[in-house]
Length: 314
Ligand code: SF4
Ligand SMILES: [Zn+2]
Image (cartoon, rainbow, N blue to C red; front, side, top):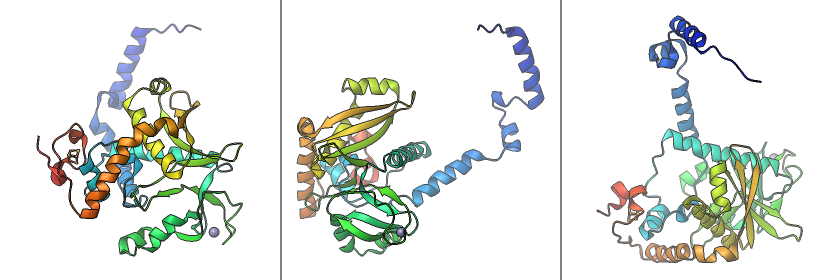
């Protein structure tokens, strides 16, 4: 069916309507602030509050960071937690979207996932990585304990486990808690989005991402710097967990289609080799208690440590 709008009449009606209501479309801020609550600052406040109570960040070399940098000094400062990146409210909301996507897919797949599980009622962890538990027990700083105060480990495990039907402690229902990756030798720590098993009983890693159609097309051709970073990050997890392959689960933002892209560790070893070389290097600096000396490089302009921490000059 074709619409046959009377353009002139519509314009005239709109002018009359705009006169009547004070034309908010033309940016009449007075109108907006007088009649509406200040939703924008409420949202900004909520995002900032969410940050304060965010997840505890383990000290160490996180795949999300080391996959995106090629500077040994950046690895060092990241390990030392030298600067808290100052993300804008908009970027923080992008992160929140990512976390929400993870929780959603972990909920959809809860019957198939392997990992650690947390009781929704009494908050105990079932199947926590035993390496993570010994790391927790070896630390007693007040801040670490405060961050972990809501979490008690009821049962630990050396391998990711399937969802218990109910909490063995209180009978509550269990939600997925990402499996912790922790390598005490090289300092790599992190959490993989998900783990499932294939029909042969082998573990398969999962990474959940949301992309638009254009980016996904690029990804299918294995193009784009972001995909390169994602592949490195994923391959580090697979290597650390000794899992042969994994799947990117992409949610297409434009169509809501779910699209899969396989990643084979063997094919990515060359890609992650330079990352592991830097990991080895930074471990030597950490061992010696020396800060790597570096000069200005292509990563500097977007580096969180550029000002105030590293100052490599230009
Ligand atoms: S500012 Fe440059 S040299 Fe310094 S840590 Fe960052 S990337 Fe490395
Ligand atoms: Zn419980």
